[in-house]
Amino acid sequence: MMKNEEGTAARQAAQMAVSLRRHFLAHPGYDTVQRLFRKLMDKRQAELELGLTSEGRGIAVIGESGSGKTTAIQRILRRLDAADAGAGELRWISIRVPTPATQKDLARAILHALDFQILRDTTASRMWDLVSFHLHLRKCWLIHLDEGQELGGRGSEVEKAAVINALKSLMQIRDWPTNLVISGTPELHDLLMQDPQLSRRLFVVHFLPVTELDSRDEIALTVTRYAELAGLSQAPDLADVEFVPRLIHAGREQFGIVVELIIGAITRALAAGEAALSVKDFAHFYAERTGDVSGRNPFIVPDFRNVQTGRSALVAEPQVRRKRGR
Ligand SMILES: Nc1ncnc2c1ncn2[C@@H]1O[C@H](COP(=O)(O)OP(=O)(O)O)[C@@H](O)[C@H]1O
Ligand SMILES: [Mg+2]
Image (cartoon, rainbow, N blue to C red; front, side, top):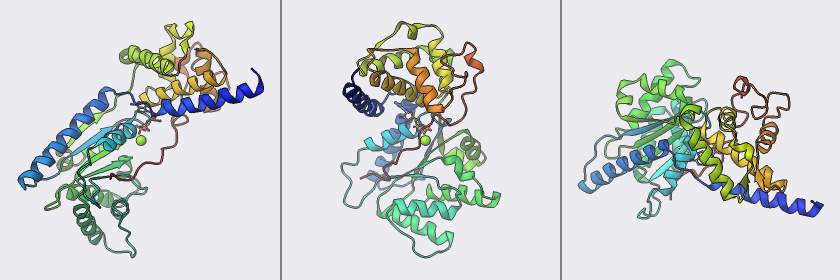
């Protein structure tokens, strides 16, 4: 290619990458969470209409990093119907649990999302009173806490118990009980299950790993879907029986990471002006993203199942999220 043609191809590839990243694939975990959201909303709506309040409920979404928790929940939140929300009403807020998460840190983060700044240091109990007041004032009936495993974080056992109690209290605010959606890694599950009163109020959804055994066809279809969206055909080597297992292994069996690998490979193929997506695009992208140019590339080496694909090298920085609903 000529130099300026290359520049155009790279720009077009970057544009395509942006649009592919916006594409959302529904999956069983997402469908389940969506159904539970609907249940929470319907219950809340019915109570409001009848002028009743019972205690809040919650959904815990558990999955490894890169399994797609944040993406799924943000999508559901954005689509919650807030059309009838009055001025100043928020309906829901979404926050990332601060580290370390003492109960004061958590209260401050919630107040911040409710557009209320605490200027002076005050007692935890006063802060939770303010939280209750502002939740009600803003008609905020749902709080999403992301990276919920941090709730058990660095604190002492006493502090941890205080945080758990604060969560329970949120669901029991008189006149305005709040529903919780908490997402996090499997450590969060252990943390929540330690408290019978809290776990009793929660529905739990697991975002399971995509495994060779269960998800082969689904992942193959996902590759096809994205290639089609990008207008690329698939080179014969993608039909190799080992390709999908390699992709799953490289993506650490996490759905979102696998999707990122697919988009990365496609972007590379487009930037190079190729008409077909092939294994080498995956190999190149993997090498680029991990900085791993040694002979340990799961798309290349024969014994790819023994390649350590590491923990978070491939997970993108969490994107800046909308802090609240309108
Ligand atoms: N359902 C989906 N459809 C398409 N891409 C997804 C989907 N779920 C996750 N992703 C992609 O996977 C990446 C990781 O997902 P994320 O939601 O951040 O995972 P988690 O919060 O579980 O760590 C994101 O960059 C996102 O674009
Ligand atoms: Mg996340």
